[in-house]
Length: 482
Image (cartoon, rainbow, N blue to C red):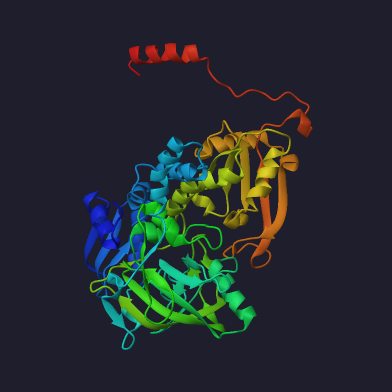
């Protein structure tokens, strides 16, 4: 059954031995970060700080910070189960014959569970405050020493495409400036930024309505980070993940809808053309992203549950909580990549690559130059365009085994022949690029080379023992007491 809300997920984590309550005061200024960083790097549990210093609402962190917690969050035995469901949906075709059509009815009924449902009221409106509230009542973390201030790090930011009216939900950090305003870190390539630009070009309004939900059931929270195509509703994908519609409630001061089970909701607007310095911020690259001008979010109304929980996360030198969230994306979305690139057998994004810096791909090679075709195709796929380095290997290489990839790749390449460079968009957080948002990428063809690719020498075999000898020695191994 789908989680009703965040607190039900908390109870599940606790029952599974994946949560530790901290009953004494800990300061949201740096101290909670240090707790969370130590916990994730030592395989520790999620943490619920019951008495954040100076605040009433408890703080939940590291709720997604392990493979087991990600499986609990998405209610599956294996992330491959979700990938399998996606593959099933992608392979659906109109069946022939009455019997086959009847067999499809249960699948079509399941699809009805994907679409969000508008309800009149929800727990997020147990308390409605249009006056006498302050963002400084929230236990927002000041994560790292050089940060420009406290940052809301797990927000679900809702806006609408001004041309299609379709909803977008993204996760963009928000620096708290004062009691009623924050930064809105809409990087150039994000959908929120695109909505903002379109409104600016239209010139018909001065304000863009925005609402921010903080805390919900885990699948709904998780959907905000998914690299979906534009105008594909994240709340529909959340419904798919939880196999139950996300209940949405209309905001008090604008026409946006937010998850009815949210812990906090901030309603307001972004003034078109208004920017303010945001940052620095200790980012997922492991470095500080520096100050830059970003739009300002003004809060007109705050609603929340009677006893809200404030969920948050930190990013920094890997591995961190975001690695486990990203690893789940990698597994769940592999079928979507294979829909467009069926030759791809597997992919991996190591923690040290912080998502966009390194992607390892194994392929079923079918023709000369195939590895290079795959590299360029990936650079043309949504947020995969940010992949700074792509290493392509043959299908018999396990890309989840980084030692094997390094061994095979370093043996298989002639650097001048097999490494190529391309120019294009790069992640806004890439501090090494020659210009903001623009730089180079590197592709490495580490596949076995063919004569048709100009390799005229004989390619050697990988060293492997005779299987019969392996079996005999396995028996003798036990006899030897080893």
